[in-house]
Image (cartoon, rainbow, N blue to C red; front, top):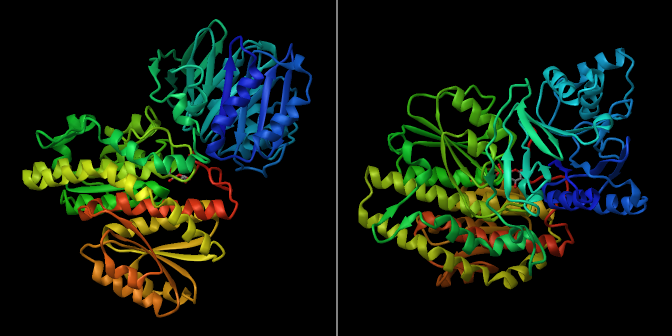
Length: 610
Ligand code: G6P
């Protein structure tokens, strides 16, 4: 979604801003712009489309316009089409104040009416221009004060950066509901909405909290609340390095991240499984472990892939930890007047830790007295900071818009949490040991599954012209079917439906026609025989069967048209293996259809608006 990068320091700012924007490209956007101080006025360039278009436009400008304070933005359209005029930065009508903004100003219409009545003239359809105009309206020689006055009038969310021609060495940044990080380097500051645009310059960062702002100048910076109460912020180290956010030998981030999963899972497990003692060690939830073990009800919430991981979690927490569990779309939960009783725990799952709906659901649950836990990848992210306790995934930054390694990371962490509760409730040491041994085998087993990538590619290529696919599974593999369908939709734009296999006969079976691909997650387990029945129902209607099956299952080869295999493991761990061929299937289908795998149309990596 929208991205901000801003700089104060003595380096050449224009290439630095463009580099930063490219680091944010993966989040999804449709237009971009820069604003640089240039001797008493702004140099602003905005373009619709990719950053390469902006770069080309900038290359045609005389170099003398480059300065040392600047900001840039990638926009993901909300108010107004993705045009050059609507791209950020926006200025007030005198042209002395410029703003880049992530988030949504909810009361922009009434503010616009007020400002129009005062004679201000607007050129765009955006809510951000209203903000720029409002700051300009209040400006009387102190940009920090004007920003504070404007923010007092604003309802909604923002991460924003503001520049002023009359205070050319100053950058103002502020946040409410949309992340903003200040990288503190040697006599330079790089502000961004995402750490990936900062790590190239420094690993020392400050995370702004909601309703906080900073006034940054070459000689130093001050932090305060938006009501002007000074706050002292701690400088912390960002966890990831520049290598982790570069492609290396891979053609796409998604492919890199699919293949990184064995290592990512090892990292998620590191220090958390004590095989000798037969224990699960989860430091992050230590102080709350008694409450967690005694929980009477668990509500898991998240969006997209994280919600699918939550569905796997429902099976894990009920089956292993014996806690009644529900999984809620965060966007629904937040508005549903949810019932939170004593002993209810809310578990928010999020790769980024910044998804607006998940954050709002979490806050709603906390307000109603639930103990809140997080399973989050983004270290220092808002959800990680606002939950009472949590467990990080430690799978490294995920750049591909289609989530892959975060999904398996979320499931492995849920498994560890469920096992640690189970052992304290009823699970015998022998059963736990069996689980732990099986878990430690997973990275190697994942590597083995991924060796089938070429075979998956060949199968995918046979079906890329079919515009409708079905993904079916039962039990633990039903959420995997949903995730397989989502992956295919997201990046190849093929319509796919994921279902619990038995539901097919209640409607979707009507869709099956000769040649339609149906992907079955058909590993041996408690519902295997039933699933074979569902496969026959599709075959009888001419559908083509692509099966993900257990190694050594000879029967399935006689039934399915294409088979990918996964090694045997304990049933609750199967999703960690069965999802891999489905990720590869989506990836290869998208590449074969010529789609932009890492930046699919209309999608954003981190959805920070409602
Ligand atoms: C967006 C992304 C999805 C992701 C979802 C939740 O829709 O495109 O890939 O699963 O947000 O994101 P989160 O960061 O909360 O896991």
